[in-house]
Length: 411
Image (cartoon, rainbow, N blue to C red; front, side, top):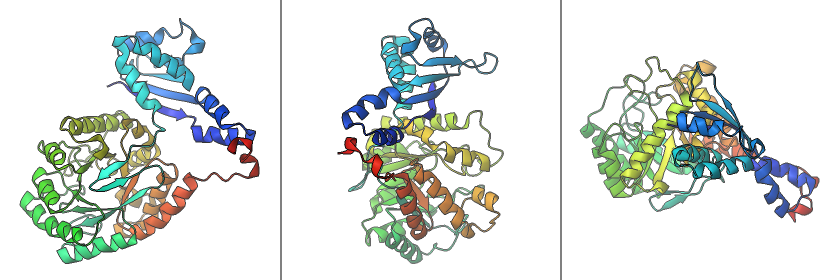
């Protein structure tokens, strides 16, 4: 798979700060933003046709194209760096589009250059989640005896329903109900038992709230029963890999779906997880998951993605994913992230008890929300997370830089 990743890129909103201070008109800003935006793209997976096409850049008009720096031949011949202004990339895209052998490279570049675009709204049941304004909250309702953070606390259906309603009252935009623990080493739960656990809870919540309900399952039969009880989203930790019938169930029901990356299974995922290129492998996995959904005729507006924090990753890899979440933007789907109470936070803070990891959870979601790299966060403690996100989103959207940044160009 040919992949292009923005290692660094000027954001238009940052250029706008300078333009405002200069007093430029809106027309001048639009004219200057594209040619002045500078970008570094890491390319991987290049084949001979792409290698030859990029090599020709130096021979032709070098000032019109981004500069190509090939990787060391003895390391990985399919890698290189493209660096230049957005206008130069646009010129390159025109040329690549005229050469069928390099169409795949052109498409990879287009995806990488579109990472600043806000994801399309997500359709969940009768609701539409519009992104770019704030980060949405998904509250966790575990109906299990052995979940890593609150196993057994809400196994009773009435208590689970009460917990779900508390999360709604605290500000949850969605609820995620699960009947099978997927903590490291957790055993597979029989479908009938999983159905027995979640269906009364989903039905009870749907009778009390209009907040969309998601079912956290990788089994098609459980998803089908949950959708029949009122669930409007399927949260599949396997990215539609565990059960081949799952894409069809989601498609026919018009439910939304969250497709997560995982290396291995819950039984094996934390046994020395290894990657040659962490973000590239996650992107390739999630791209395949989205393709499986689309091939089953799941509407793109009903698909979101999750990099799978803690699912086949070391603590350091989890942190890198959070640092590079923007790499996933090229997939064009809303991004959901779940860091709540997870073990990598305990490794950083020394908090052994998952229930005592609330502060570190809030720090993690605030960091990625302020950077505008996430669209939905999945949490156990909604009230506290809501306050953290109010601050983080305000920081991410801050623009009051003083009177001289509101000159004639802002009129």
